[in-house]
Image (cartoon, rainbow, N blue to C red; front, side, top):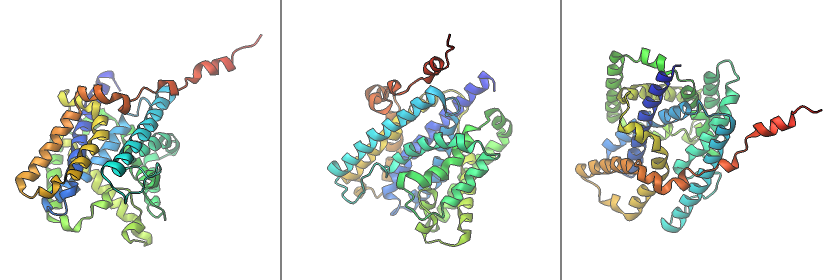
Length: 346
């Protein structure tokens, strides 16, 4: 792949990553309202059909050049430090500030959004192992289906989500942008955009029949009351839906460099901080007063606005010490040691 193609691919994926973090914030912001408002429930389910599969996909893409070596070890350590910091922070906030006494506090049960950090760590470790198989993505799908039959708590150490979303991480890792551009012509892009909007309409018409928890990837089949041998087919159907929804959403992603490309470089700040804003809003009781359509629109607009604010360079400047801590001193470059061990002796 040429340098030009690589930079174009990076631009596309950065643009995609920013749009996805917008949908993450919007989905989490409207979640407290989806039971009372069917329109928001439809939007919520529609977002969940593609936003996590694509977020994992783009995470896999950016792991191409830093999966192993000192840089790979540095990223693994950074993920661990991020998890320790924010698992502690959000647990303390939940207990002492938001007074949520019913939650189970454990480092082995990630706090809500922090499952992504645990799974990201696991994906980076698992990918080289799965890559040894002849058809690694197909093998990952088989494992994801089989894991659903397990008799365990899927949220423990994010085990279920790790394997359910691993195929998307691998697809991103092996993503060939030049091939994608050849296939994703203007005509296909228009059809994909129409299909994405049509999917939202269909979900809106059938919203009462859809349980969004099937899209979370965090539960085993027994959680939903299914114990039949064939229930794994349901996960394959969910995969099909997510693949169609994900590819369709790509129609809305710009391919040129713009301001959202730059904002796409700082999505981790939105990801780790946005839950604090939402939890504070819920604790304030403001959601109890949101009933009118215009107020629902304001919630969505506020989520988008907060995404923009958290993506600004000033946010990085103020919080980078805890969100992107410098951990190079944890990472040992083994090359000098290896050379010393294997040095010729006289």
